[in-house]
Figure 1 (cartoon, rainbow over the protein chains, first blue to last red):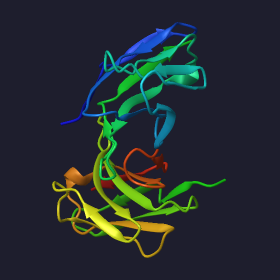
Figure 2 (figure 1 turned 135 degrees about the vertical axis):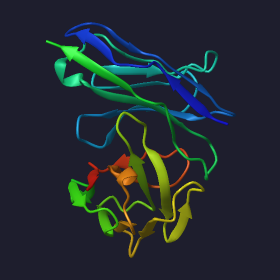
Figure 3 (figure 1 turned 90 degrees about the vertical axis):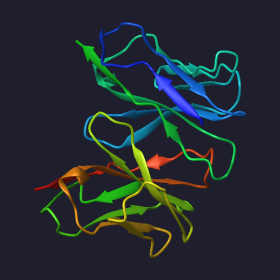
Length: 113
Length: 113
């Protein structure tokens, strides 16, 4: 079945460091790919998405490119801030109407001032 | 602003005492979802409504029920909460099923004493 694998955390970085959180997927067909972010005590918020190969999603300085050849959707940010501390979930949904969203296990990010 | 609202944000109940969690949306979306999220885990889908059509996940315990009296509101009823039901409960909506983006509420944190 479809699945999402993302790097385990926690990831600890200093402010202004470069961030990469790896995400790879297994799916039939051409799924849509998402990154959701969950701040402490809050629900999930959509950070960015991509719906077809080579699409780049971007938001708030974060970027991820849908790579069909490597089945990856890695999240990157050039200069992180303390306010980026949160849990990040990579996710996919299939092309069928009945397909559910499948989440990775989440990666906790700590940014030190 | 259009949004997904959950009440209460924090709920404390006693072992075996029924509890109801509430979700409302101003997005006029067709689909409403309930997820259970335990500490340091990804959200787990319990069930969803597509309009008035209820769709239960195969592994959702019978202890969990849901009602959707109209487009805007959806309720999660836990008939006899156990200690293992303590978790964050997230409501989400989407225009349609499948690859559509899901919009999450802030969650209700349930404590079972």
